[in-house]
Picture (cartoon, rainbow over the protein chains, first blue to last red):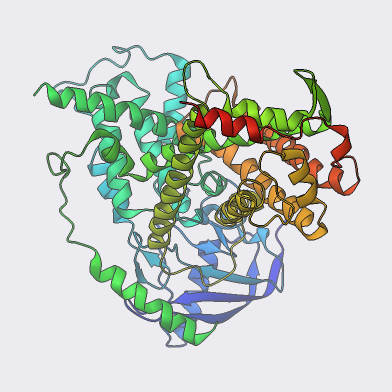
Length: 258
Length: 291
């Protein structure tokens, strides 16, 4: 059974552009059903704003089913809001109560410059993926599904890592603005599998060093794991840390032979 | 929200947007990096600096545990050594200088250990400083609303401050009990006497207790964190990492805090008449002057 939430105060970060000053604007939602998703609540607010001749709040969203990684939002100081293992689009108003004040901010990191209002540019993640988040596969007919045997626990671990949707909540939640959880997930999901072995060490070295150009460093708070909508474990970071050391040695040896 | 703060932070927002280079859209990297000596190359990245934090941290942990266990000898009081009555801790201090004596001259082994520890502290501080600078650059504009941390602990968030407190304390501690500058009743080589003289002063005892609590908080996170930084992660022992860190921090704090408390309680109390051989001062001088 649905109930109606009344009198919600929204404090939303508004910023005209990348170089704009930015400020919190206060809006009041008089009534909203608790079955509305958080983004639907923002849609309703935007309709109100447009009807009143004001500018709509800009925010990122796409699939709204928690799998694309486009939505973001720092809600009451938590990346993706108070619901565990959930992206903002899957957060519902039933997590809030009548009379609540909800503070909404964009992700903040130098690698994620604000485009407008709550929308940030996360293309620094693409730079990391470009530097090694791929495998070299032969072209031609698709190979048989079970041509390369993969032990079940390995496949499971790789799948856990591959769940990363690249939303950037790990960076947003990290007190240091580090992208170690994202990078380690992207490295691990390929490094764990036989298909990823050919480029394994090149991948680790390049992706870690590209990450370094944009992001902060890991101090093992664990905030990223808590914020991750896919509950990716910080065990992935340990895996990356141990592989990076091996990669530096192996790549150096390999280079000396060329 | 305060207006002046928004304006001040916006300056950084602007500079950070302008400093981002054009997006190439292709896989870069290959051949673009200068070859540096291996260790410098490794130290050049944040992950490499974290290895240094972890390894120098292990050296520091080894020292604080050894230091605490060695100091427990104050509780053994006076022992008989070569027919002389002497405080066991005084004898221990002399023993440290005689380490590996047939192989190395008097005091050399101790100095090798000291140089190792000094190097570890310098590297630990440099890596911490560089990583802090990197982290500040990674988020020049802070969140303008309050953060709601889920799992970050007080220990993990105060590492910089507990670390600074520990370094300042080490300097004070050396000036107090190694060099004797801050200890009005200091006699070289008479360890038991110096400990009693220093820790009988109530403000000093409180300082030692406070500094060791800061050390304990630092170890509580650091000892756990180093496993992750080094990538020592295995489902078989992961559940022990937290217990190891908590247990070790507790043992070090309890051991170290006991010394000022027991001095104030009168358990550690220097008695000139209890010993026949006050210290190894004469022996030290003779042995260092003999070629």
